[in-house]
Length: 388
Image (tube, rainbow, N blue to C red; front, side, top):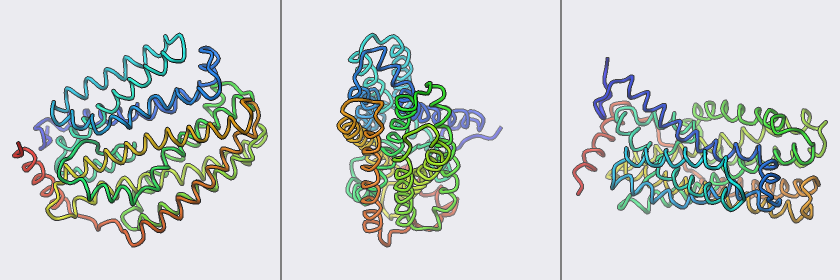
C-alpha cells in the first residue's frame, strides 16, 4: 500500500480522511439549507413570526463567519486534530439538541453555537488536507472547492496581498447570499403561497442543487482558460436572469415554465462564479515569489469565507425585511417575495458591473507543473515548521 508523503499514512487512510474532512464542509451547507425547507413548520411549532424565521439561518451563518479567523488561529496554536474533533462534536450535538428546542431563543442560541463549532472545524480540516497531500495540494484544493471547500485559517505576515485580492473579488461574496436567498424565498413561496407540503417543496428545489453540482465541474474545467472577469460578470448576469423569472412565479402552474428555468439559470450563475473565484484565489499565492503559500492561502480563505457567511446573513436579512414590508407580514402574499426578487435583480446588475471593472485584466496564472507545485508547498511546510 502506497503512503501519503505528508503525514506518512497509507493512501487508503489518507483518502478516507479526505472524505471525512469534505463531509464537514457538506454539513456546513446542510446546516444552512436544510432548516429552510422546514421553516414554516418550525415557525408554527415555536410561535415565530415571519421576520423571526430568518434567524434560524442567520444565527448559524453570523457566528460561523465571525469566528472563522479565530478558529484558524486556534487550529495553528492547539493543533488541527484536536480542534477538528471539538468542532465536529459541537456541530453534531447541536443538531441533536435543536430537535428538542422549546422556543425560538433556545433554537437561535444552539444554532449560534453550531456556527462556532463549524468555524473551528473547517480551518482544521483544510490544514490536515494540505498536510496529507503536499504533492497534490493544487488538485485536492480544487476538489474541495467543488464542495465549497476553501482554505481557512490565520496568518501574520501576508495580510495585505490576499486582502487586496479578496476585495477585488468582492462580487463573488454575493454568490452564497444568492444561494441562501433562492432556497429561502422559494421554499416560502412553495409552502406559504402555493400551499404544498415541505417534502413537495424540497423535491421542487432539487433541480437547483443538481444544476449547481454539474456547473461546478464545468466551471472548474474552463477556469484555467478564461479570465475571472468574464466568468464572474457572466455569472452575475445569469443570477439576474434567474431572479427576473422567479419574480413572476405567483401560482403553482408557473413551476415548469417559470421556476424551473429560473432555478437552472440562477444555479449556473451562482456555481460558476463561486468555483472560479475559489480556484483563482487558492492558486494565486503559488505564483508570488517569496510568499508563504500555506500562510497566504489560509488567510485568503479565511477572509473570503468570513465575508461569504456574513454577507449571506446580511443579504437574507435585507431580502426578508423587504418581503415582510411589501406583504405587510402576510407570508401568503406573493407581492412581498416579488419585491425581494427585484432587489436581487438590482444587486446582481451592480455586482456584474463591479466584477467587470475590479477584475479588469486579472487573469488566472498559467498551470504549474506537478513537481513545481510540490516544491512550492514543501518549501512552505519547511518554513512553517521552522518558525517559532
